[in-house]
Image (tube, rainbow over all chains, first blue to last red; front, top):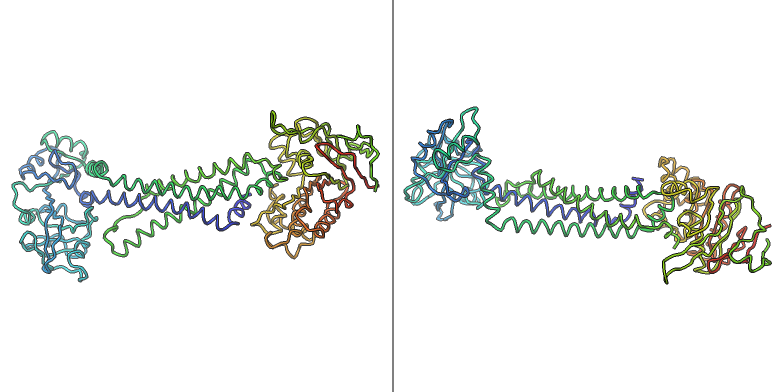
Length: 380
Length: 254
């Protein structure tokens, strides 16, 4: 009977492909848009993602996200280091800065000042140069995408010169980072050097990165740091989700993407559901004949569910594959806009759930028609 | 052939000619006092108004009458596709009231073959695959089912067209495939609903001759619903209906 269900389904290729297309279209929209949403949310936390060596991020009590910098006095570092259970704590500065190339182009960039001694906070993946090159006078490490923005079409190499706040900076390393939300170039330098590049200001310390002693729970230590210093201390996870929560609550991004995903579900569901229902209607006489010839309702249900599952799985596979291909192609094309985005498994699961719902709803309509079908109708 | 027209009016209306006199062992289908009503209240329609009829094995019985006289309703009840409102139906020695749900469906799958007016072939299956469907429904392995269907295709003269899709066949050829499909599982009752209605005169006669030739045998009953008077001479018995009752115009082969 499975063979019969398959042959009936694929017999009308136009409808069969129409149903598969509907499911694939819905899956594509749901998976692609949800993945871009997840990717964008990750980008809002790109600097957090790229610093994995610290367990705890310490910041001003009023700070709401990684970009909402409330500079602290450098003396706060000593307070954090004084908390029992802290193995080490280092400074990190983060600020926006205007950069000018020798060709005269200006652009905004993210300047990150990492610990002078340990380079904690420096990028994980170096394409050219190394962290220790930051010790060279005016040395900075520039991210690859930022390099292509600042020096478009030119060979990627160290030794380039930039101007930041009328101070000379030399590119001593090229790195790969998680693309930031704003797609600005990311420039790393030593903390003491970053202070020189920044506009004059009284406080320059953005974050204190701390590591718990072996055997200490970061969660428990972060609470202790908060209690003893009056600063906001968050574990990596807490800060990551605080940051994403801020963007979800305070921007229209989730609403926009939510609408698109919902539309994908509705349009995909409508195409697939309607076509599948029409397919059943057109085959009603055949279903009636099968009933008359001795096919039970249970087997008919099985046949319809099998047909629905086949188009569901095929449509889902094509839609998800197209989404993955889209991100793969954008990655390979070097487009910074969508680089570093992919289809997370959670999105794949959600899309599968949505397709499952589409298929169940489509099947229910068809099943109802077939189950109430009188086999005697074949004589009319 | 004998035309029984001398049956008194009061006895013949609603009642088959009792002089045909079949014993229970010779009777495939036996209906007694069968009525069927559709709808309720003022919309109620009495399609059958107390039918007594029997269908013997080994003969081709034609059920004839004008449109709307209840022929289709009667064969639907005889084939177990429709429940009567009242009355008794015995099918192949089995009281249909004792069969319900899946048992009735299984009984149909095993014992009844259907030939429909519109053929009702599955358009995506080849002719021989269509003919194999009743066996596949019964769980016979596909290759074996197709092998047995091919033998029937030969019998109906369509071996050469076995791999053609229904859309590639003429109406007469499609009906021959439908006949092969109806016989492939060796049913004891064959129900044909207007098998010639969608065919031209020559094709209709060919199909009826084929039905006569390949379906009628001593352990099988054949009922053909038709209002095509051009093929009346091919039936062994004719049961005429009008207005939900058996008419008195009946003919029986000697």
